[in-house]
Image 1 (cartoon, rainbow, N blue to C red):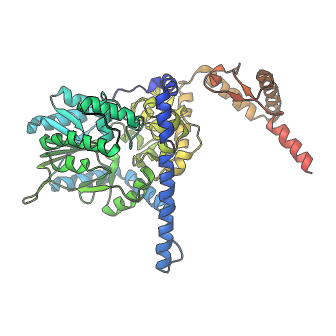
Image 2 (cartoon, rainbow, N blue to C red):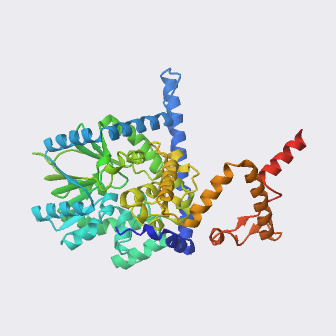
Image 3 (tube, helix red, strand yellow):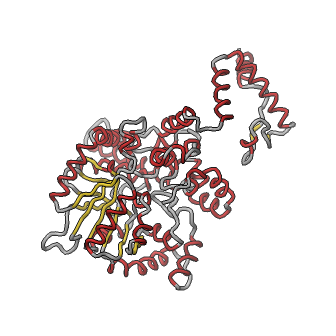
Length: 487
């Protein structure tokens, strides 16, 4: 996927001016937030009921499970090489082949070599964000292998002209029902349908031929299980199981950080993953896939390949950003982010949008190629407060901002303003005088209105918003007056 993160500011302007997109985002806004909140409440209520029935005083609430999930992911990161070697040994013993890829180019090379080795011509795909990182579909097409996305959202994006996903869980959240209906009618050459079950049946009918004729299946992996050498897939559509069992070759492409020690660990992580992602207590399908098709098995792949991808992940191990390797790709941070909810995923310009993308994209592709992403946050900590593995996203975004400033990557005016602010903040008397002068200046700019339309000292701040005018002096002056009046 071609990176366009360096054009974030321009892309934001386009998205804010897109009336249809803004309507679609407004419709979607809050749905995942409300569903997660309801799922957490239900979990805690069930836990209390179970504890009471067992005569226990304390229940294991959702926050305790988050603590356990964080500990599991941290344990893996601390000894990542050990768990990967364990996984490789177990997977190989089960008949799989484990391949390693340093970057997206090697992912594509490995996948095409597998296709050539087995004479494969069509690949059906379950949703895989790492294949987006590697731009795998374009490589397959160039190598003579037809890629077919079978996740409903990804299928819609593919037939729409190979659009990029705008969300890691709900990739087509930026489109509405009418847009999909028009697209299906145009692509499938059938009468236009606006009934959702009818549209999903239409997609099922179109994809069934591909399921039956494909000779390669490509999937991602939510978790790699070290003790069994298998992979856990979490989906809400049956396509994942058909992709991984019908073709004679199954290729799993996933990041090296996805390994977990045991099946018990997977069970713990599932409790937070599905509730954080879609508000479900469990997803429709949880598939545990280990080894190749055995003698007498009715289905399953004859050949299983794991392509374990670095693509910048190992560089985080000895960095301030190692906490990002705990990420389980639930999407909760973007669901709750006011910036993402306003501009949508495509504005971020690469595979991962929202707060997690604002950290991962600069780290994976270079800070200088994603200068605006660390700034694309209010630092309100909604993302950090809902992250199921407690990644301190606001802290990481602040660290990226500090690195930008240290390396001179921010505009000189911004750096000068930061130094001036720091100087004033360390000198309370000067700060108080400067605040009074600024308050008067802002009051003069407002001209008696409650809003400032153009901020003279920093006009860019008011290009897309009005600034509230100060109401009766500085905070310090008003606070002091209030204390005097209450004494």
